[in-house]
Length: 335
Ligand code: NAD
Ligand code: UFG
Image 1 (cartoon, rainbow, N blue to C red):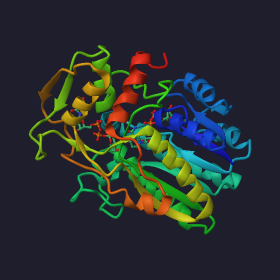
Image 2: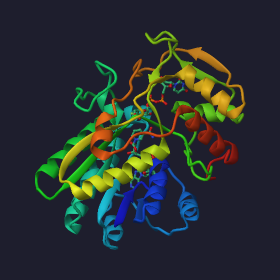
Image 3: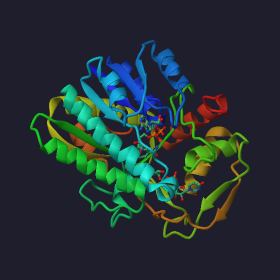
Image 4: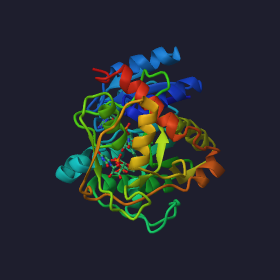
């Protein structure tokens, strides 16, 4: 099948392109490169020995979408979005426009082209501060920032669209904390500026680009006082998209799935695991809690196992080893 991957030059999209090509699919990527570099697609093709079609364009442009759909598309995997929580608080309208308007334009283009299957990148952020962990898909949805609001709105819009016609199929994938890189060290996460997220920040401390990690609070009600998250290898995430696509081709309706390992790790556990993987010391300073952070959240991923036949395979040691290989071999990312 020819799969249109929006945001396919990004971190998770590029790893998913590798998995799709390896599974025998054809791939068309549409990306405006607002948070990525086209070199990644050269590396994806070199890694897989297969070519893909790249449309340099914006999902908010009807013309760009028409070019992307022109090749004959069987299904869409929709990654393209802005994703920085802090930036979304400062510029909510940019997030509403890019993420929500972009998704509406994409669904219109799918309808015009007669494409009936969609896999969507959602986020554990839709659960906000959960009442219980591990979190199941039927937990209350409540968001705490404009980025999270866009994910919740997009989920609702996709669900409503799906309900409008019986032949439509959508899979909403709620990622917990994606980390890691392709084991080859050829592709990985390449954040612009100072990383917001823990793993890329630690990796830059290990490689000497940053002096020390600031641990955002050690007074949470957790065993070591630092925040607990469900870190998930991006290779497992990529594999989940291939399985979700298979599901969308054989089922109709709209379904949501948690994607996580089902295990929580604290900030300090991640630091220790990264020190072990890299052989480098990660100097840490404890600072104030980061506003908006929850103490602990991890997934109950049972539904993804039961329905999609997916379960995470990579452990924390592999997540750290693969992040380190990518960081060590590409200290300036794709630049
Ligand atoms: P990323 O920024 O690396 O990738 C997103 C890609 O989309 C980028 O290449 C960017 O250039 C492109 N893009 C953005 N707006 C576009 C537009 N209007 N038109 C065309 N291309 C556009 O991010 P990622 O980490 O790979 O995340 C992918 C998806 O997963 C996003 O929807 C994100 O919200 C979601 N997600 C990410 C995480 C995470 O921690 N990385 C967690 C949960 C959910
Ligand atoms: N942390 C630090 N220091 C840092 C960065 C993070 O101590 O420099 C801590 C945070 O306080 C938190 C943990 O590391 O306890 C993880 O933080 P991340 O920023 O890596 O991840 P979050 O869980 O806060 O958020 C991420 C994405 C969100 C997404 C969410 C769930 O950034 O967009 O996962 O998928 F919604």
